[in-house]
Structure formats: C-alpha cells, structure tokens
Image 1 (tube, one colour):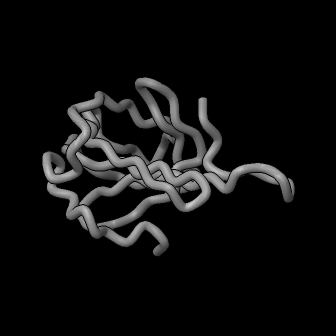
Image 2 (cartoon, rainbow, N blue to C red):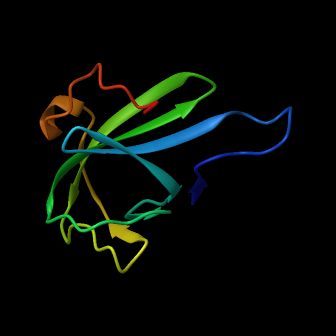
Length: 98
C-alpha cells in the first residue's frame, strides 16, 4: 500500500485524494483494489477519481466505488476504470489541495 503522507526531510512529498461529488477527500493509504480513509462518510456506489501527487507531479485515474463509502469503515473498495479523470466526471483542473 502507498501511504498518504511521508515524513522526513529527504523523502518525497506524497498526497493522495479521492475526488467524489466535487470533494477532494484525503486518502490515508492506497492499494490496488482498496483505499483507506481517515474520516469515512456515507456515500452510495459511484464513479470517482483518484489523484496521486508525488513532489508536485500528479497522476490521475478514474475508479468505481462498487460498495460506496460507509462511515463505519475506513476501507473503501475500488475498481480502476481508466486513466481519464473525465470518465469519472472529475474536471482535470479539480483542486486537490482543499
């Protein structure tokens, strides 16, 4: 899994966000078929976007949240849908910094 932040002055700066319904939600950890949220909330199954930023270089891709998000669990199942954020209704200029 990829951790959402890194510590230490010589380490890469890493940020991961889930883009859902116009919100940029911080991701604590990311795996190939799941992610972990620090602050889960209730949301039905939907298409979403993921943004991985390493030292200010971004990679974006579209995912499906087949089981949605539950406020009772930090784990969110994901299925990769493609590399274009537009497929998830996520504008390429979405602000992930809050």
